[in-house]
Every structure is written in structure tokens, then in C-alpha cells.
Image (cartoon, rainbow, N blue to C red; front, side, top):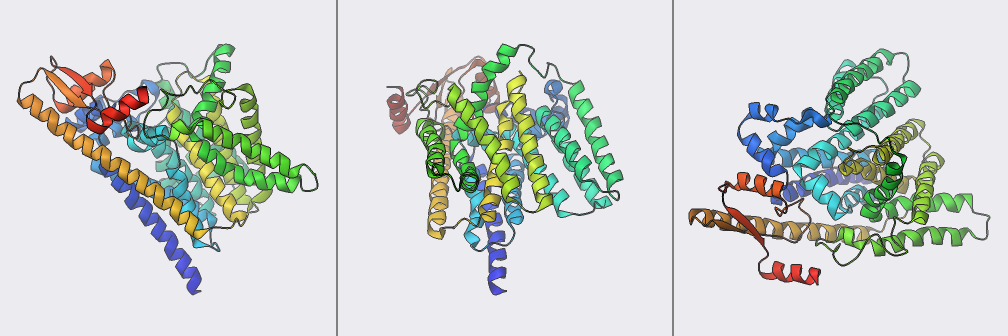
Length: 486
């Protein structure tokens, strides 16, 4: 009994630690990119936040929240930390009672192992986080509530409707994905007692979806098959190449599945080894996606036999997805949990199809698929009773924490010194403003690199419109930039 209490206490400590970690990272993260303009809008008050909602892409509530939270960044940091810790808690709650408490660190390690692009856009950028990460985590919370409660009461109904409204008005592709998957799940799993409540939820979702789609300013799908075929490498690059470490985690249950299915085959070990080697070679080739500085300048991601955009890699990842789905039905015994996970996988499939057929798809939506793989990989680790090496787990997590905190400490230093230097030049009536740049890519579009960002940058820092700005690297950062370009 004492050991069980200790495990439960440890799980709660992991949730609290996750909240504090992302709260610190959020506090160290500066306003950047399109958030500069949103900050200026939010500064003018709630009325302006409503007036400046761009509903041409179907984002009704998230458009307002981006403007409001960009100005109230402390509130954004708290909400983001709460949602990230909620996702980790859901993963750990679904794992239930475990033999080794350190397995509860796996979800936190998973969300820290995303690519630099995903971290900067889906964790640090307020626009990317509010429009994609927030609704993605709310989908997990929604289905967790369906799993947790056998019967839906009035209070749960209200909560699920609120979740639905937030999800359906954040990203049009996530909205359509969520509605279709939810419709299939509720049809297959609803009982007579809850059928009226399920119908009310679906009705609210359907009406909200119609309103969001009505405001779209462009078509949802390509009409040219060649454009769809050209999008296949884009899909592979966005999902797999960008997050190859997460794909390695997802390969663990596939390894066990292949071992079970090919147990009597003499080539069993050869098949499993070859399957893993392809991912390992891909990791070696796509390491620059995890680099804090831009290494795209020194390696071409579209050349070489290990580039994941090659046709044989496309076939490999189709096989990967199918085996990943089969492994769930093979190992997960709880029927209700299996239905939830299959529904989430169905959502990932629908969302993946949007990448191929939609010209207005934003790859920020990929965060939902990545988080799904993290969740399922963690559940599989527990279900398969994979041995947990406590010291190794703590070491990996410790190194990741040191890495991110040190990177964002540097980013914070650059941001503070940059702000002070800009203020000094404005006060000195300089007509050409020198802007300190930062080569660390963990912040989305931190350096004003195009005409639109320059315009937003001037508004945010209150630089006179007639002045020019010059982005320059100083000190060590200048040496890093020169080295990367050589």
C-alpha cells in the first residue's frame, strides 16, 4: 500500500514539475513573428481584439485569443503550462498503476523530443500554440472524459460542449477531423441512456462547423491530382523527417508486434533490425531538424539515399503507420481504451489526408499526430511491461531540461539586450536602427526577415515608420552565423 501511494504521489509530482518547467520556458520566451502585430492589437483592448479577428480561415475564437493572449503573455504562459501538464497527466492516468514509477517521466520526455520547428511554432509562438496545440490537447482531454465517465451527466455535458466549441473554432482542419472521428465514435459506443446527450454534443459541433466553414475564404481541397502527388513528400517531411525521434519511440510497439507475428520465422531478427535501421539512418540524415541553429544551409534534405522524401521511404512509412495501428489492437486489451485510441488514430488519418488534399493546410496541425504517437507509445510501454532504466530515464530528462533552460536563458538575454539597445537608438534619434539577431531557432521568426515582419516589428518596438532597421549578429552569434554559412 505504501509503495502504491508513493507511485501516485510521484505521478502528481511529474504533473506539477511539467507545469513549472513549461511556465519557466514560457516566461523566458519573447514575443516574436506574427505575435508582434497581435500584441499591438491586444494592447488596444478587447474591442480591437474582436474587430481584428481574421475569420477567412475559419478561426473564430482562436483569432481573438491570439490577439488577447499576445498582449497578456503571462496569462498565455500559465494556460500553456496547464495544458501541457494536463496532457502529461492524461498519459500517466491512462497508464494506471505501474511497476516502476519512472515510466511516468516518459510523456514529459516525449513532448521535449519534438523537432526545433515544432518546439518554436507549437510551444513558443502564441499564434501556433493557440491555433493548433491548445485545441489538440483539448481533443485528448475530451476523449479522456468520455473514457473516464460511463454515463454523461448534465455537468459533464456542459464541459464537453465547451471543449467542443473551443476545438471547432480554432482550426478548420482539426474541427472537421474532430467532428468526423467523434461522430463515428459516438455512433459505435453510445448507449441508450446517453444517446440524447451525445446527439446534443454532435448537434452543437455540426452547427459550429457549418459556421466556421461558412467564413472560409478559399477552397479546402485541391482539384489537381498532380498537386496531391507533389504533397506526399511534403507530408513525409513535415511529419516524419521533422520528428524522427518520436518515430523511433513509436517503433517500439511495432518491434514487439513483429516479434510476435514472426516468432517462428528464422528471419524475424533480420526483419526487425532492418525496420529499425531505416529509422536510425533517417535520424542521422535529418539531425538538423533538431539543431538549435540553422543547418539547412550545409545539408540538402532532398538529396541522398537517406532523404525521407524518396519513394521507398514513402512506402516504408505507409507500412509504419499500418503496423502502428495493428499493434494497438494486438496489445491493448481494454475495449473502451482501444476504441478511444482507434478513434484518435482515425483522427490522425483524416488529418494526414488534409495535408495531401488541402491548399490551406497549416503544418502546425501536425502537433496532434505527434502527441498521439507519444500517448500511444507511452501506453504501449506500460502494456508491454518494457523494462524502465531509472538512471538512464532521469539522465535523459535532466539533459533535455538543461538544454532547453540554457537555450532559453540565452534567448532571454539576447531579447533584453536587444530591447535596451533599440530604445537607446530611438532616444538618440538614429534613423537606421541596428537590431540584434539570434541564430537560435527555438523561437519562431525571432529575426524580422521580410517586409511584413519588419512592419510588425516596428509597431511592436514603436520604431518610427520612416526609419530603417538592420538585423546584425554580434559577438559569438556573429561567429556562429558565419560558420554556418561557410
